[in-house]
Image (cartoon, rainbow, N blue to C red; front, side):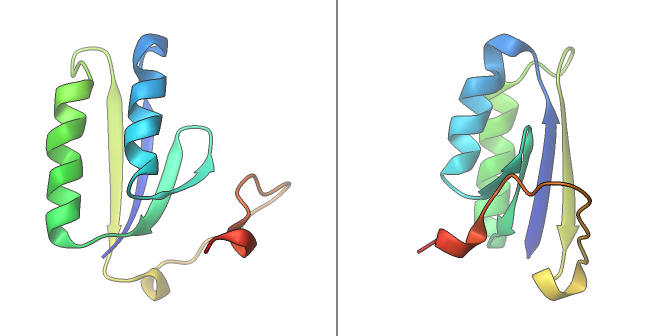
Length: 87
């Protein structure tokens, strides 16, 4: 599955959420990650995110697609993430 995660968390938890998501997904821009995940990885991420955030103060949105091909992305302006150098 192809997943986009968008988050809005308190400043004291931003670094922890960002570092955690970098283990699984590509950083796209501030508070946005995306990439291919297995179902097991997706559920592991959800479980860990629930431990990191405060559900009374923070917000995480998961956009889930069957595949990257099922998703279309258009960008206006600069692209913050450069996928050309990913190994």
